[in-house]
Amino acid sequence: DAFCPFGMNKHVIYPTYGLAEHTVFVCSGGKQQLTVSKKDLEVDGVVKEVDDANDKSDAEGGTTVLMGCGYPSNQKVDVRIVDAETMQEVDNGNVGEIWVRSASKAAGYYNKPDETTEDFHAKISKAADDDDGEEGDAEYLKTGDLGFMYKEELFICGRIKDLIIVGGRNYYPQDIEETAQEAVDALRPGCTAAFTVDPVDSKGEEVAFIAELRDVPKGKDAE
Image 1 (cartoon, rainbow, N blue to C red):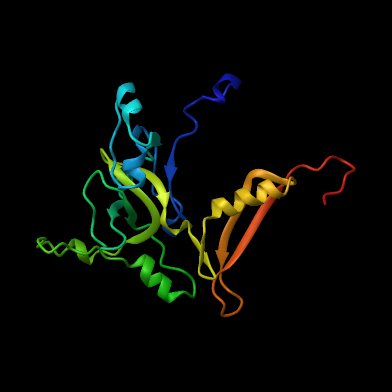
Image 2: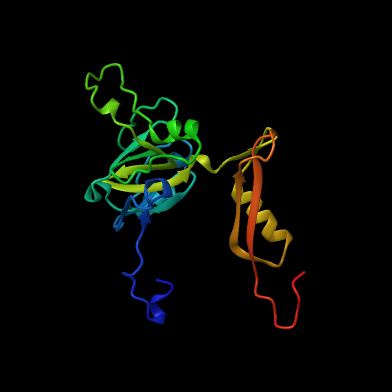
């Protein structure tokens, strides 16, 4: 809507979901837009749709709008929503980690056998009353993303692996990026990234930060 007045067709951009470990693509062509209770989603991990203006005003903790990212089954991609702790598939309407399986799943991480086993060969644990053992033998890719399925469409609502742990302290990359942008005027807003890299010694994970600089006026050197 922001660019339509300038001649952009609103149909040229649509939600898509993918990751490098699954050869970039999982699904696309998102169609549904959901307004849900923010508290139920973030605190309880439950998707509670809010339909009308009265429900929105009465919703405790406010509401948030989520856009679907497409239909994995149309792309022959098997997507499951799984409890990251129990490794069991969650019920419909609940948030969990997105697990993906198809011929596009990568073989693993280069020279990282432990991480490859953990992330690329995950198996869904079966509940005690589930006699179907076939599904539990399938190996999925653990994406680290949080989401849910609604009417067969995938919705993304968070990221498990965002947390950065250094020296026993927890940091969110968004906080690091925002702090840096507020402290240094030369950084272009929204064009920074904080993440972890493999350590050069045995002290644990290290933080890396990259940023794009604002355009420097001609004839003026950047500090």
